[in-house]
Image 1 (tube, rainbow, N blue to C red):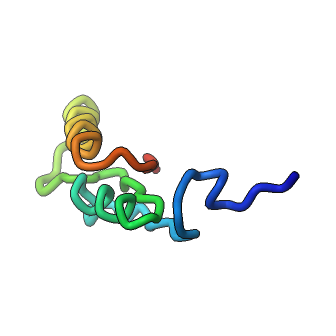
Image 2 (image 1 turned 135 degrees about the vertical axis):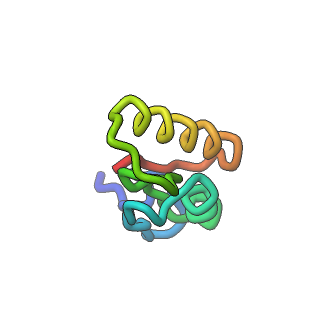
Length: 79
């Protein structure tokens, strides 16, 4: 039996938000997911300043993921 993309992703509408590098953050991703689409984090989600440290980049992303978990129980994705 074939499944629809909405069933596979666990979303209401077949809408996938693009991972827009510096424009995504926890609030944006959670809003898309709460509206029934699939919110997607960009590689620099939530960052407003540049860092050259991969450790700091990972920590910033971790904080955005934790914030998102508090804002939605719907599916979202990391790019």
